Amino acid sequence: MRAQLSIFFSYFISSARDLASIITVIAFFQLVVLQQPIPNLGEILGGVLLVVMGLTFFIRGLEMGLFPIGESMAYAFARKGSVFWLLLFAFSLGFGTTVAEPALIAIA
Image 1 (cartoon, one colour):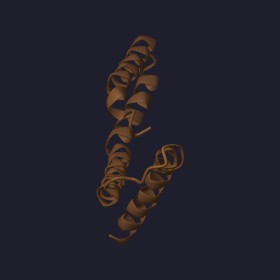
Image 2: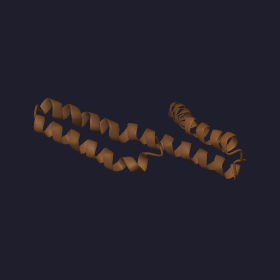
Image 3: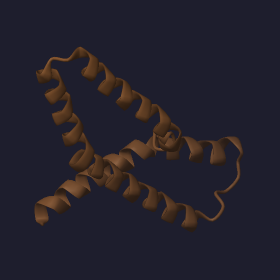
Image 4: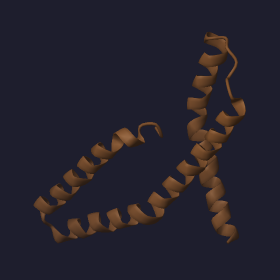
């Protein structure tokens, strides 16, 4: 259990670091360029905490569930030796990623 909490904490710190640049840019423009205080600071900080936690769970879930399946499928297709099925698999993954991208753009 302790190892899982350590892993979760490292993912949490990584997610917070990834979002820090977005938060810095928004805070800079709000405070320096617009010269206005940040409205509802408590609610915004709570929302940022929820976003970081959600991103942490999302990334951890991908690495636990989807990445191993995709990796094993890619190796299986490569061992099979069929270029057609390998290219169809790669195209399908790319297409699915492109369709999902608008929903994930905020995370980037």
